[in-house]
Image (cartoon, rainbow, N blue to C red):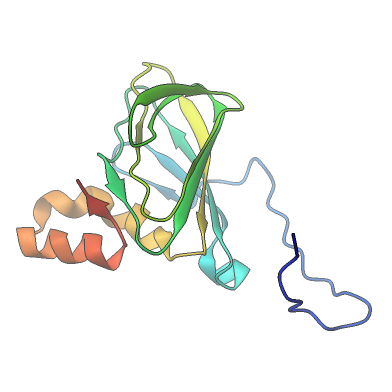
Length: 159
């Protein structure tokens, strides 16, 4: 086992950490009431990863089965119950449960519990998911070709 090649070559480190308090307002609230907290974005991590806290209301939907060609995705349930699809079966994820989806892995998620739920989502390497989160609820007003282009641009391939 080895570590990645060094990317920082200074002698004394640097002041570069970014703190975000837990009570910070969401960066985006969708029409469905889902709150997105942009904890670490592709821009803020130099493309290393993207980390998002997603707060879902009761019966909040979610995407159908899909995969990504350029990034892995992982889910960590903070509270409530989130239905997670691992490519073979649906499971009820609760506080502390984790699902890792490698590049190309089929997956889906939704909150069907009737209670609020919260989870962390991480994408690696980082991708500009903010535009996806902010515009996915507008798909009904797009043509079939525009929807296809939107999903292609955001590395979402639905089954």
